[in-house]
Amino acid sequence: MDLQQYFETNKDLWNQKTSIHLGTKMYDMPSFLAGNTSLDSIILNKMGAVAGKRILHLQCHFGQDSLSLARMGAKVTGVDFSEKAIAVARDLNAQLNLDATFIECNIYDLKDHLKGAFDIVFASYGFLPWLPDFDKWVQIANSFLGKGGIMHLTEFHPTLNMFDWEDPKPRYDYFHNEQPFEEIEEGTYADRSADISAKEYFWNYSISEVMMPLLKNGLTLVDIQEYDYSPYNLFGDMSERAKGEYVLGDFPCNFPHVYSMIWRK
Image 1 (cartoon, rainbow, N blue to C red):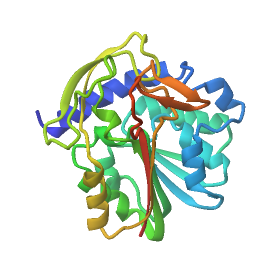
Image 2: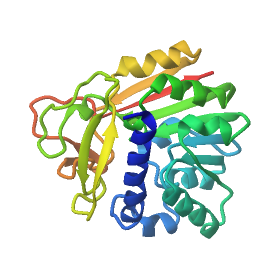
Image 3: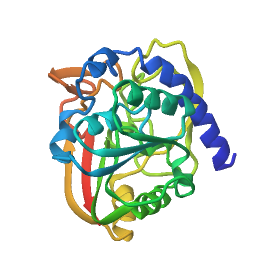
Image 4: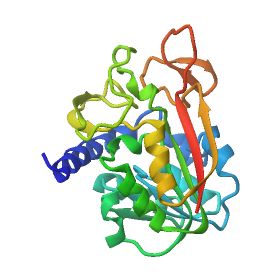
């Protein structure tokens, strides 16, 4: 298969996920519409004040985090390849009377759809596994970052991504392979019982395979943190050790679940 076939298969999956996710507890639309932020404490603590900042949010799904940043006073542009997700994002933007912009396109084609420079390029939780070429992604993202701008990345740790959802044992490679993993996803991470069964393709990246493309593209590391919990019950049966802190399995040692990186241009 060529990359376009991978992209089309994954886009079909995310189009199906969008309508399901709108009704899930994880996305909690009633709370969001009432004014609560969708951003977790890890991101909020690292993001800081964003009022007046131009933010490019890559792979934004249906825009909750983009709109949460807009509520904080940022000028936000969200991008996603799912036409259904972008349609929902635009509807929410109008419903909430916010001033965010949403673009429907594959990230690798973004230069054909967007011009200008941003103060912050932001991507989080689950953006990385859908990318066959992270080096190219960094080149594109960096091209939209103004001098002195910040690239803010928060993602599930590659150690966590080694585990199987159904049986918490290591199954997937820690390091990146050119050929993707191919699976049939039953349900979604937000609702394991959802009536959905669709093929997906995804890739893993180690920490070094994330950091080196950013370094090679001239970005300077400002901050990196690893966290021994996830803010989301990603596997469905994780233990909540404290409010909003989920851990996988009953292991005798703790291990990283999430990392955050801040890079400056």
